[in-house]
Length: 470
Ligand code: AMP
Ligand code: MG
Image (cartoon, rainbow, N blue to C red; front, side, top):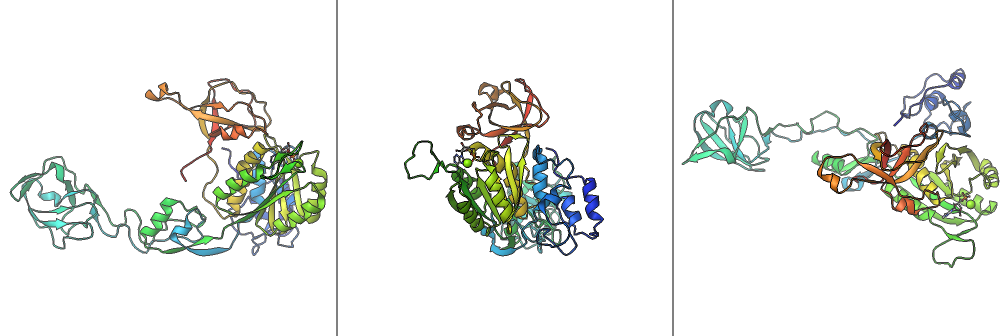
């Protein structure tokens, strides 16, 4: 995947001359960094020279709002958005899916003591050529307490503290016992099967950095340090609504030309999985007053997502309205599906104006909004969706000059499972941006890169899995 770091254009040098020389070291796009004075975390709350989104994104090399490369759109959003700063203290369990807001530095070693990795006998490696005398037992949580002397050994269980004097554990299955004399077969290695204190986590060595997304593994790791609570960023609040005179909500009967609103349901699902607090503002008619009221209400959140109304035929009054309420850019992104998109700010809320077509909503959400919201939430681990390689099972139509996100099924033929074989990917068939079935049947996106032309069956293509370990 191309990197999201940007290079500065001549424009940013121009901004620099305006006297902003000391800039905070943030993980933001360099364009934004250049524009921020030292004590300012948010360029848009700062009343300095450069405070419009348009100026900020114009610093990015190759920025063209009428044919925006998908990478450039992602980069532009990141350049503008400053992560939320507020944090809260939560118990470990409640930290699942949250963003860590502190450094985790162990104040104990894990494990706290050298211990056995196996059930067996703790021995002195130097002594094992002669039969040994068993002098006691060490259990997990019940140390032996004494010292293993020359010619002696201690029966030991997994997790039990290594007794003083012993340096090696020999597994019980290979030992030969005659009375209380035990012989060790040849082929052992010094220190085998011993886990050392601090081998997992060491006192004073930072183990998790702020910005880390907390998964089950991190919860366990934090618990292994005995920490009961931790500092996380507060949850994002995201408000959303659908626009369109043709939309009906579930529970009403459709009149001619009407459709049920499905976008609010896919958004509900995608946002819930992202772990944000959501506010569903319903369906809003294509009416300036209704839209203005909805936008103003939504602007109390950290982000607003709208669907519909940004296509060329419809955008005019929305454009005027958004210009009145805040600053919103209307982009034509070089992609399919999902070409028109609005991005900007109304009050303190970031606005993502997505197209109306149901597949375009999901694609633009996963490709842009997800990334922008994760950045806003304070994450700074690598959360880009990985691109994997698979072999195209069929010819794919594609023209260079736009990125396509076809919906695909990644599979291996049953018979081929017997021999190691590469993964293949086929499309889900009809790829219209209104065909939501194409998403429901898919388990991956087939990502056809900007420069690429038609693809022949058997050629490698990039895929993004729709599911992962959660
Ligand atoms: P628009 O972007 O508003 O021009 O809408 C493009 C297409 O998407 C039209 O066919 C709309 O009827 C459809 N559409 C817009 N919003 C929704 C929605 N919330 N649910 C289902 N279809 C929608
Ligand atoms: Mg519409």
